[in-house]
Each structure stands twice: as C-alpha cells, then as structure tokens.
Image 1 (tube, protein in one colour):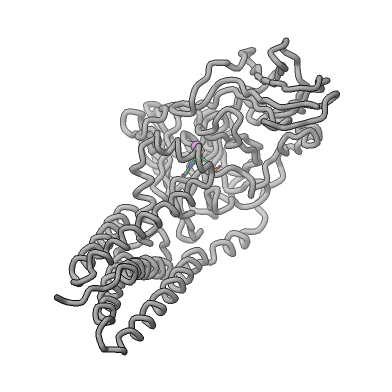
Image 2 (image 1 turned 180 degrees about the vertical axis):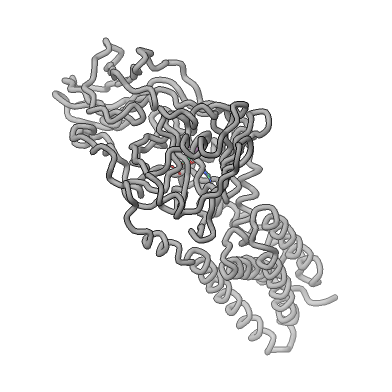
Length: 504
Ligand SMILES: Nc1nc2c(c(=O)[nH]1)N[C@H]1C(S)=C(S)[C@@H](COP(=O)(O)O)O[C@H]1N2
Ligand SMILES: [Mo]
C-alpha cells in the first residue's frame, strides 16, 4: 500500500491547486485585457444568467446592492469545498483528485467560452496551473511520511510558494484588468459642449435640511444595476454605435460624431423596476446627449417598427416601445454626459440611452453598441426572457425619508419629508396621513420638469408615543397613487410607503 497523505495536508493541496488555477486564470485575463475571461468571474456571470428570478429576488432582499460580493464569496466557499474534496480523494493515488481539478478546469473553460470574447488562453492556463500544482505538491506530500526528509522541505516550500504566488498573480491580474488607461481617456475628454445648458435647478427643488436627498444625485451615489460582475471598459477609439434593422439607412456613429453634434442637457429621474416601495433604486441626474428621435429620423425608421432594441458589450439587451424614442416631445437621449462629466464607467461609458418615464431595464442601455429598430414579436430582451414585464412604465410612487423607519424623534413640532415621482407625467400633489387620520396636503418642492422627481415636506405636531405615517402621490392627470400592494416582480412595486416611528 502506498503511504497515505494526512487529511489536512491532502485538503490543503487541493485548495492550493485550485487557488493557483484561478489566480493564473485571473492573471492571464488581466494580461489579455479581458477580465471577464477570468474563469472565476466567468463562472459567476454564468451563474447569474441561470439564477431563477425568485432566487435573485431573495438575494437582493438579503444582500441588497452587495449581492455581487455575496455571490463571489459564496462561490469561493463552494469551490473551496470541491477543492478540498479533490485533495481528500487523492490521499493515496494522484489520479482521482487530478480528475476533480481538471473537471473544475473544464467548467471554467466552458463558462469563459460562454461569457467572454477574451479567448481560451486564461482558462487554459488556469487548467494547466491547477493540474501541475496538484501533481507537483502531491508527489512530495505522498513521500513526506517516509525517510526522505527533503520531501517535507519541498512540500513546505512548495505550499508556501504556491500560496504567495497565487495571491500575487490574482492581484496583478486584477490591477492589469482594471488599469487599461480608460479613466485617463475619460478625463482627457474634457468639457463637453452643451454641458450646463439645462435650466438651473431652482433653490427649493429639494428639502435636504428636512431629510430629502439632493435634487441631483451625485454620480458616485447614483444607484447602479449591472448584470455583469465586471464593469465593461470600452476604449473610445474602439467604440462605435450602429443603428440597424428596420431603417432606410444604417448609421454608424463614433464618439467624435456624437460629441460634435448639438448636445442637449436634461435632468431625468431614473428608476429600477426592482425598487421596492420605500426603496432607493431611484436617482436623478442631468444627462447630456443627442436626442434619440433625431438619430432615428436620420436613419429613417420604418413605421412598421414597434420596438427599439439596445445591445451592450456585456450581452445585456433592452427593448423600448418605439413611440417613446421617436416622440420629439419626450427627451429620450443617447447620453454621453452625466452631471457635467463624461458618463462614469459604471453608468455606461462612453454612451448609454436614457428615456424618461420607463424603468431602466426597458430604456437605459449602458455601454451601448447597437440600436436595432424591430418588432416586439421579433426579439425578447434580457429581463423579459426572465419573466419581467414587456412594458415598463414607472409607477407613480412616493417615499417617506424622514422620519426613518423605527426612528425615535422628539415629540412636538416636526417636519416629515420625502420624494414623489410620476416620471413623464408629473406630480401635482402629495398627501400624508398620520395614524390613519385624514390626508394632509404636503408642501411640494419647485418643479424642475415632468421627467423628474419632486420633493415634499409636511409640518406636524406629534404626541408622545408610536406613530405610523403614510404617503401617497397624485399625478398630473389627477390619478391617485394606488394602494394596491404589488411586488417588484414582474412590473414594479406599488402600494403606499408606511413608516412606523416613535415620538417622545
Ligand atoms: N449594459 C447594461 N445596461 C443596463 C443594465 C446592465 O446590467 N447592463 N442594467 C439595466 C437596469 S436593470 C437599470 S435599472 C439601469 C440602471 O442604470 P444605472 O446603473 O446607471 O443606474 O441600467 C440598465 N441598463
Ligand atoms: Mo433595473
């Protein structure tokens, strides 16, 4: 019988082999400038694509915007478990564990092939590194119990070397993959003509002193929803946008074509369909860009087209009702600027679409590379394939920001405050009631446009004790925000935001 490797050492060998593989893959992905070809990230992205909607909802509820980090950590735990098993099944013979390590390598290779255009080199190097490390550590470990004192030393140095090397390779890959000079290129763009031409936001458009958010959301606080684990990094010189499909002539536009056009600037409130009642997946920015209707008129969209499909480099697709983007009365933009700067990388650099009044998943293609005029029958976009509604008008909604849920505030005079929105319709009134009493009319912030949110505040005199505040909005058509409670899936949440707090 060959000597058997102790359990802890066997598990450690499995772990180190897989860590070396993933680190090597990450390093090569960084070297080839396609971090999404890192086997670890590609497996994560493949997993996201296959996660059923209810599971995604639970993940969002539990982890909120840290759901991506939670996924990466969860994957690490599972992979570590499989890696330890690879070691443990090879305590006597090399082959069984080697097969497990190679199988992980194959999974990584398939995931990269599906998720990335970065080519097979990163997962191939990962597979080779994993198998070689496993075999390389297994040999001295197996003989370590025997009189060859050298083998113990070899094993010790080998494990330490692999551990240090893996951490180093992973870090270098990460920094290479995220370096690539794109931030520099973005800041080199300089001021965009037309930035600052939107009417100034009037004082009194927000009530930050009473607890509302600022009217314009700073770019680094603007909510973010990405399907991919890797923020796409597009070099401007490689980028162009094609307008295709049911058009008289296809257009191809590069960044200089766009920035040399007449750019318009509009503050627009964007909202995610996954925003729960009372949630904060809603933000407002001043977007700068080319009106979509101009581009579509130039391309000559066929009257038979019903859907405009946006395609992005991350594989994401968006389907927008064509009338929302051909209507000159709706400020739908192909945006290249946000709050006076070029679009941040996270928000779609170098260009994205923004359409007032529609949830982001049916209107806002970030990192866009193609707009195709087509029909609803001909194409089903990313989230619609996963069961979300075909049309995504933003529901009229309102939120209480102060007091916060569960807050304890002094009894007596106080000011309640929050926001309301009915994008592309406008807010006419906000009403608040306390402890089920009669509806009181709140003061409204100055209106900036029908396409943006509107802040509200209400002075109240609170008796000591527990209280319940509720809010509802009334839109420009006179419609009162519905009290019917609906979940975010499949068409966006509805219902009145209710906050319990204590005074005294
Ligand atoms: N390419 C691409 N575009 C995308 C997404 C994405 O994951 N990839 N997410 C969409 C969703 S669901 C929303 S709500 C908005 C969010 O835009 P933001 O991250 O700039 O707030 O972008 C939309 N456009
Ligand atoms: Mo979204």
